[in-house]
Image 1 (cartoon, rainbow, N blue to C red):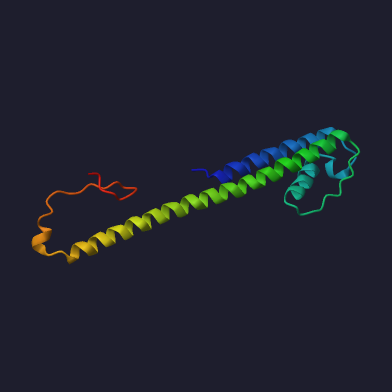
Image 2 (cartoon, one colour):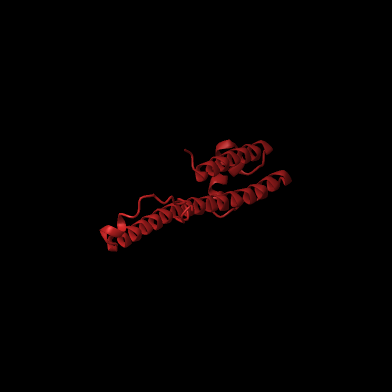
Length: 138
């Protein structure tokens, strides 16, 4: 099953390819956007903050594309962070629920061990419990 982080990364890669194509097609006089490969490399470095932007864009369309790309990529990276936090919370929530159920079962077994055999034989009917709250369903 594909996680949320993988889905957001795929969308971010598609956005990176789309903006690289757009900046390469605009035909700026900059060497960093001369062709698709150079535009892809420059935008990847800009998105990962590896290289400070030193773009001197003479084309208005290229500047608009670049600003839009920066905004979309920052929102995408924040979305990846939120997806990671969500997956971690879900995993910890499941583990905590399991430990709580185990602890409740240990308490019940320990309390039953204190009962005498004669008193314990009076428990003929099973008590059904709600799996989430461990409350009797009576």
